[in-house]
Length: 284
Image 1 (cartoon, helix red, strand yellow):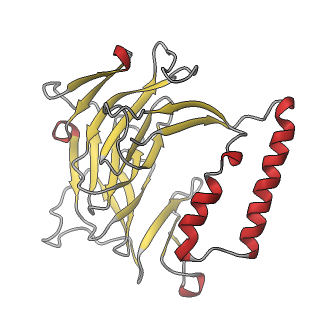
Image 2: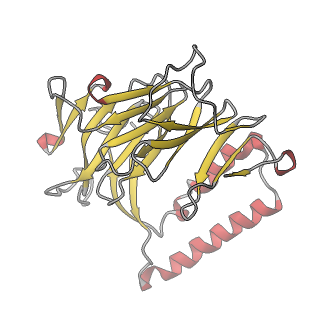
């Protein structure tokens, strides 16, 4: 069972200043050593795990809540969590990952103490969805101007899926209860709320970027392309080959994508290429 950690990076109290200074010195020493001896690709994961999972680096944060539990009752996620997205008003959080499910977290109407600590549960999952993805979900986003009811996911199975959280007749929703009745949520199959499956990409789809529209968004994939999707139009995806042409096609695998908040027609894409090979790319 994987869990989410909700933290508050507020300034430490005066009594904590000494420990804070010690932690900062430790972090500075770690980063200085990294500059002197950058990790190779082969050991970079091990280095990140050993360095940034050190408790001393997290002591300056006040843990507010752990979302999910390890009781095996289905509350929260059951695999690595790869994707998080807050709604625009900050009242709803969606998460997804290797278990190919979406968890929708909302403020708890009457916060109660967690059974294993003296912390209140400020957020609880009100809904979990099976996505229909058959491999790890890498990114999840709310679509703007949809009242935080439409989300998009992309996955290692090469698919992009669009969900309407409000679309359900309730007939297949399954009520789940845990925590002695204090945790109640509904499980909903993807057949009830998946409104579009897009198969334009031919390799793993890594990131989603939304636009100032409820119908337009971008995706980037290891198939070397960036694509724009318009939910107002429909087409037959592969193997027919009738998908719209990609916005960008580069000679190497792509994995990162970001748009400019002040000039949304600019976006940056990057992947398995060094600066010498021409990456990252700023596109218009």
